[in-house]
Length: 150
Ligand code: 4NP
Image (cartoon, rainbow, N blue to C red; front, side, top):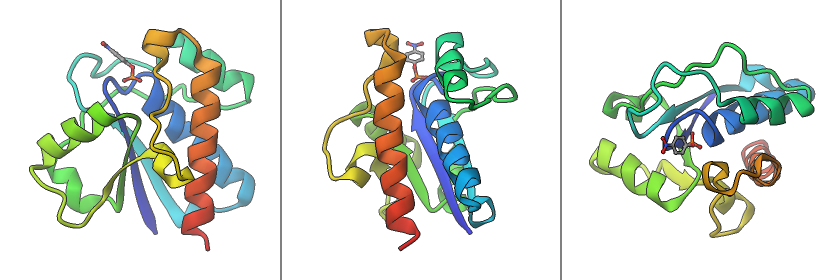
């Protein structure tokens, strides 16, 4: 089983969107049992909070539910429990590496790298556009499944 942790700053917009988009893709392909998937924050700002309502609405447009999700913080002890820590932007990567101290097993990546791009996932906290973020996430998640299921 491959264990994936999506990571962003607050765990209320981008990384939970990635978690639930990825889970939906797995369900549609009958691949749920091959993966364990979750998401977390590098900051403490939003811990315990549900997914931000506009992010929840964007997921709902695509028949994806994330009702049960509450923001949690990434912990140093998570490093050995997951195969991949997939961040949304460069500052998430820096903060993740700060929490872990190092990345000897090269587990930390940025989502769109999986699709061959150095771009970050659009941050809807600043753009207000959750659809662009959703599309970036679909691009990255599709590429992860293609790469890992080869
Ligand atoms: P996320 O969005 O990292 O995609 O969950 C944000 C959530 C909270 C803040 C920024 C981005 N904030 O500044 O509190």
